[in-house]
Length: 476
Image (cartoon, rainbow, N blue to C red; front, side, top):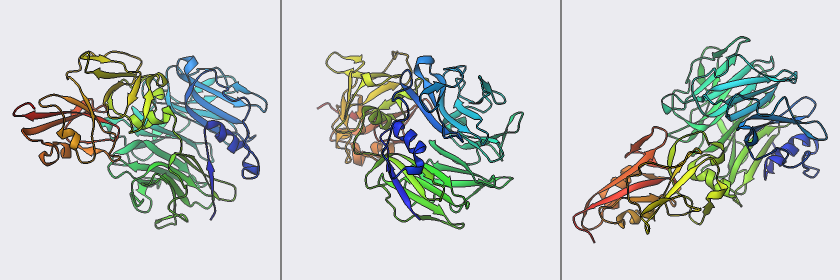
């Protein structure tokens, strides 16, 4: 078994790696066509290659109302396929696939928050079955086509915010559920789903279980979905999983391990085992992709974590790309990493508020700095009618000393920017951890933007923020 390792610095290299696959490890990287060929900044990009090695790129088009645009490369230039901005409204969480007859299909989360698939008919884009054919979906979608040309869509169910997994198939007339809806029967992370189909038409789904943060693979046996090997098969917590199947039907899972490095595992028919070594990458990784060449050799594409851009920092701050979630319409409590400062001018589609203790007023900051907590609203709307607390800002440390030092009987917006595993609100309520002399209780609240409610029992994620208050007998 050979694992080939590539480093990527952006989408342009991904284009080149596909076009130059026959000489991938012998030649230089070259830009395909003109760099920056879109008319404006784009998000939700996806790439597919037809049988003539023509790349097709799908993206959400900022210059066309955040709708769908597809371009292909004809050997000399990039050209819009059909019309730019062809979806009926704003889209997100998209994918593009091309079948064996070079028919081009796109999947996206539409403006109704549901799945829509469209096909290019040679002159324009037309819906495949009904538009908005799914229930409300989360932030993970995947489109796959089997050898017979059947279309399958995987998505995370947004019902009851459990983000469990559902697969649907297009039967030539309508979209129908494969097996049962929400078949994972557990809450999954909202952005870590992958659907793959082997040469015999068997369906496999990889997802990450929310509470354990470990991967599980399930197979559809013709009647129901069954676990492949053992559930939660990694040794530790994972992120960024990707599933691939070789020509012999062997399954491979790639993921970012608990050391933030890349690990690949193989299913041998009875159990999952690590391929060669636990840490494929020598550095921490920010993005991962797994593929196999014609000889069934694994190719791992990753972006290392040696340098960070502002956008990457913000992606980590609140768990999604701010520029890609302008229609989320949710408030979030956030902070930024220690040693980092983020310019709010680099963020689109969001409104951010901080509290100025000198002027006793709310402001829209120009820079986000470590240690401070912020309210962030992920839409183009501005304003927040009633933030009920007077705020000062601190950083929570691992030994909770900052909670003990907050002002007596005053609410404080506290950023969590040190503990990479998050901090339990139960621990923050624990008097042993939080009480200082003269105080008899600590109140801590975290805003759950998914459920639109205040939570006193959850684990607050790294780079989240909480409201805290010490109830004290006398002021210091």
